[in-house]
Length: 123
Image (cartoon, rainbow, N blue to C red):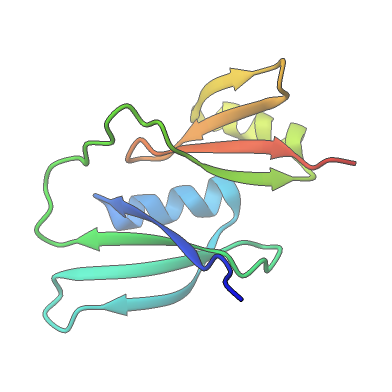
């Protein structure tokens, strides 16, 4: 058997990213690992549903330049039963970067420019 475990985003400002993911998606740290020499820190975020899937935020001490995400032709997706509520919240936060009303979805962007798709739960 093989199953998904985690996905990684490299971040420039770990505290800013942690605050964003907490506010925008209610993700919380479930595990951390820090290099003995302080050169990097990994923080694994879990969702409120307890799905077991983790978003790993990697912070590198010596990194000072924003990450080049290319054309950003990748994204992470979340399903929610609170779609309208989250959409309003994300609009208020100013992090909605693209909406596709025909598909009934939208995307938000995190502090480093990663796109995150928000999908309504199917009923």
